[in-house]
Image 1 (cartoon, one colour):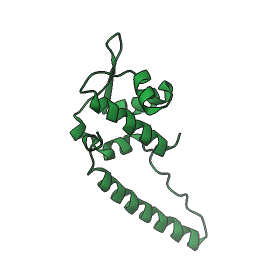
Image 2 (cartoon, rainbow, N blue to C red; image 1 turned 60 degrees about the vertical axis):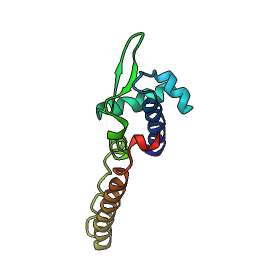
Image 3 (cartoon, rainbow, N blue to C red; image 1 turned 30 degrees about the vertical axis):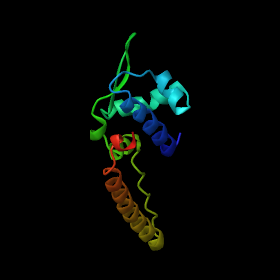
Length: 129
């Protein structure tokens, strides 16, 4: 699954969790809200749990909850949790054009990523709910 669709499912499920006012929601409930499979939701929420954005509890009254207030969770936090680090281009031996291209492309992608993250940090989960 691509990060864009993961981000979409994550935002949708986190939005419903924020709107639940702290009441735990099951992965089945969240999957129904997001129009996807509970396994997909559990996989994404597992990643978000490792980033300390959500918590889960087992049992009859268990489910998923936010670990912070929606005003304290930014899109940047969510995006960072779901993102895998970009792979570094492998240097091409003996070709100055390829080496220069790799170096400049890497620098440009770092600047773009920095700008995107700054923008995402300005929007909280509460802004979406």
